[in-house]
Image 1 (spheres, rainbow, N blue to C red):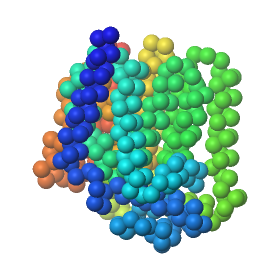
Image 2: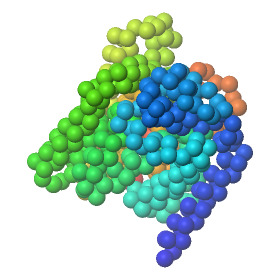
Image 3: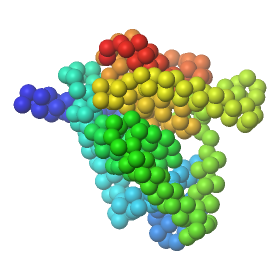
Image 4: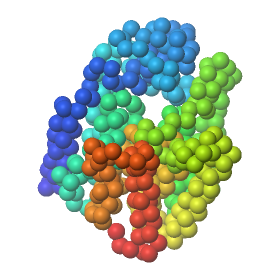
Length: 382
């Protein structure tokens, strides 16, 4: 009973913190929610028989007060139109309110999920609320300001991981496949199912079936609507965002190459990125092989998600929502990490060098990965 009241209090405090920050954070209204505006009217264009990946076509059905810029081209696979069509049934102002409310509800669901399945110890409520809102340069606020589906994506990731730690491999794989139509890379996490101590032949069949289904659905638009698929592929395969909006390893390497005078030497950039990925994965495999799934499953999940975050070729600023419970878990074990995770809010008014200013969420994830890996390697109690 007491634990239930603590859960209610945790949700109330987080909701209060978020409400106070939103009220003074210029998050809602005006030209904000640009991602949802682009997604909404892109699907409206598709419903009108136009090309949702063509900026001119999208703006031809855009009846909002704000222009949709070319850099906001619809970035997701055509399969994902079904998700946004849930909202195009309503006029844009109403759809935006419904979408925003759904995001707030999903945030509360995430808190309950994290608490009940992954953070089993007694939670320090005020401390959790602060870290939840401000770690990794405020990804929740960024996602709400842009109205990006990052909160929906984080919910899918953590629901999938909840299935995984309860040894349910098929729903874990299916949720990753759904998410990969939005972000492309989450299926990288699928080999985690082989850590489950059950019939490996059954798991192998499941992963093969899910990958085959994903492949068929992914390539199907190429045959049914080649123009649509090629428009998607031409945009998705050429997006190369860097800096604070995409603080990930590949973007960091691109900016570093530019800084040292290599410019767009893609062979060097891709080789460096490949070496980084190989190094991180080698260390990851070496450490995880020493662990027991039944004893360390939550730590393995945390370490795996951090590994994914620091090697993913694209990990946007709002994607760091996925790492928030890991941030809380590690900081409660080592308070020295608090400055690293809250670096953005602590230095918001300080003029910093470019790489520190634009990549500190990535550095925080790498440091967290290193600390957790070290503890696991040394069998340090966490």
